[in-house]
Image (cartoon, rainbow, N blue to C red; front, side, top):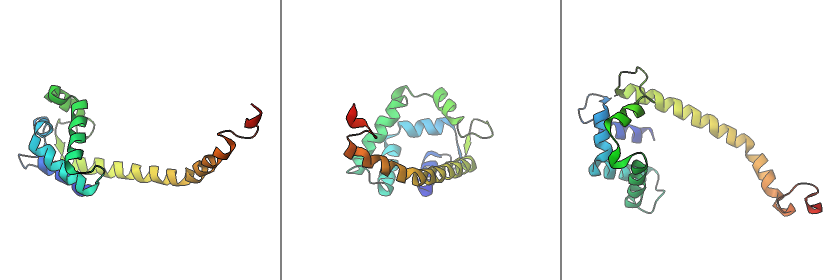
Length: 140
């Protein structure tokens, strides 16, 4: 996944200066070539759709839900604030790396929690034999 994040950054960084401006991000979101390229790369990692084309359709609908053709530089600038640690209005490669590392640690933490409560869910799933209820449910 880290390599995919790097691929996204490199693809969007058309000035090749290890920084993403709002203009570069916006251009990438509106570029058929960029969307197709990144959808193919994502499909190689996670073939969650039948084909890269199917995944591309999902990616396009996701971008559309974020604003699509109405997506403008002001909204991208607002979105940049989520990862722009130094608040300079530009996303540096190092900021993406830090954000990725934080997100990865949170994912690992969440996975551990799911593993811990998994047996409890399995126990509750076994209650189907009682028609979805606990003790005394047949009395209702």
